[in-house]
Length: 89
Image 1: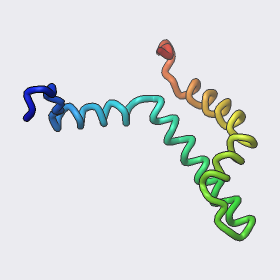
Image 2: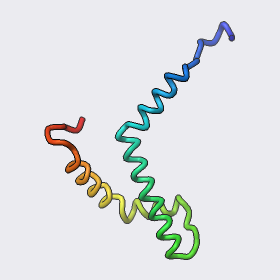
Image 3: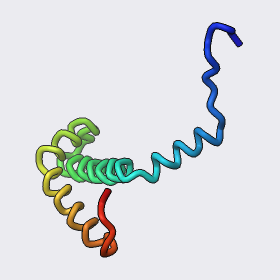
């Protein structure tokens, strides 16, 4: 180890703990749900057109056509699923 460089090691426990925190975060959960919808859209459009349209095209098409309504429906679904008295932080 060089005396000029600070020790930049992380333990396996810290790394695993960080990963679990990310996996449990609401932002990551929303990312996964949105990604799943984009992949469904990619499959549907690829089947309709008869060839693989690719993720980027599916992403841009889904954003343009479906994201706003999907997000509104998702928010409504999550709001009704949230127990009474529990506020979003």
